[in-house]
Amino acid sequence: MYRIQIQGAVPRFSEFRFTEPVNWQIKKGENWAVVGPNGAGKTLLMDLLQGRIALKEGNVEIHLEKQLPLWQAIKAISFRDIYSLADCRNMYYQQRWNMTDAETSPWVDSFLEGFPEEKVHTWMRRLGIEGILGKRVVALSSGEWRKFLIAKALMSEPELLILDNPFIGLDRLSRKSLLEMLEDMSRLENLQVVLVFSDPREIPVWIDYIFPLREKSCLPVRRREEFMADAVFQNTLFPELSLPDEPLPVGKTPEEVDYEQTIEMNRVCVRLGRRSILADVDWQVKRGEKWALLGPNGSGKSTLLSLVCGDNPQAYANRISLFGRRRGSGESIWDIKKRIGYLSSDVHTCYLQDIPCRDVVASGFFDSIGLWKKCTEEQRMQAEQWMAVFRISALSARSFLKISYGEQRLVLLARAFVKSPELLILDEPLHGLDAGKKNWVKRVIERFCASADKSLIYVTHEIDEIPACVTCFKEL
Image 1 (cartoon, rainbow, N blue to C red):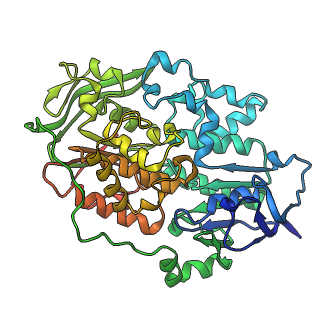
Image 2 (cartoon, rainbow, N blue to C red):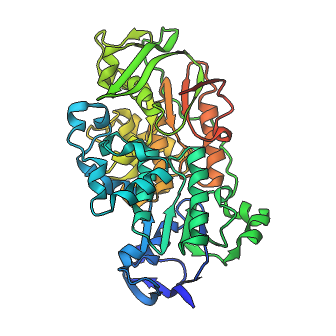
Image 3 (tube, rainbow, N blue to C red):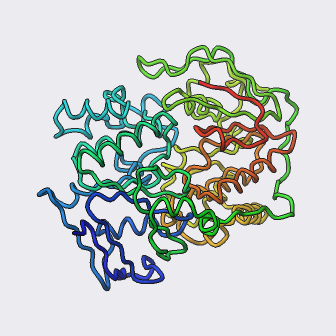
């Protein structure tokens, strides 16, 4: 008997439709992976599966064993579900570093009311995040947020768990633990799993079937072994992209470039309440050096970057120099930011502006969430050129909130590059990108950083994602 069956489904509104009616059958005990490039329709298919999209034709049948309401029997976790932890529309991405404002954020424990205390501690311990109980939501790292959402979903004992890009924000140990736990639960506790991937290399061995998508077309279902052995099909699904021969649209170098050290930190300490986040950190980044910043979830990487970007007021209580000037010597936060291009999960989470993607890219000139200043014609042209580099020109007029997570990531990458910064800070920039785009974006980074005047800080949990230009490493 089919647990879930989608038959001839055609959404009522054209913007949600696939090229053909959707058909999909999931039998009891089967675990699935939905795989496809960015913008293929993976998240759309998950919404269809959960009954979130009104149908013009066809139907979605779900047969459950437990007498649970649908919202409890099927749990889905995606990047956008982070918004459910707090009122992100009233947040700003520096809020977690400002103690007074952070105190308005809800406590993690407040989202667990109604669950038995023993169950809460069991699941938090299984995912290695028991320590976040008693924290405010705004203080969580992206990896902690992700694991908390998964733990909360599993506390409801669902029959079907859907994880969209399940590894976003998780370090290697957390990924391994999560997959082992899901495999055990699927075999022993009657949980079925649907995982959504943009990179086939991430598909775990215990998945039974693969449902490939491309350009809102549903391709024939394959068994995992068949799919993984067919390199030709994978290369067709995720084609290798090449950079154009013309140079990148690098703008003019700002004035005041006479410095030797891009970053200099001496015995830097950061505390949040009673907790020590960073203790006696020394770090020197010389002008033109390319660094990888490594460390597990919660090790303090985002905190360290917040000091560099001028988002953390504790920078003024520490001995930090940027671009040859001591912090607090008269420069404003905007003087600092105008020389830095920045992409992070915090920026992505808080970028909730329903504006055209071209305006999101252009906002990089002003380091703003939203475009509140008028761009010059030269700046508009620069933004369009960087969108072309990242192959997102077709998204120019579309709302940022109505494109996929991977497409949003590319838009925010263009935003980080748009002003040709002296210091480029990229925190997990390849999150959510499909297999073909990952290598291509790495080549963009390498070509941009070929200049001896460009400094780079690259944060990742994946060693093989580090650009070839990186020669220095720091671990927290």
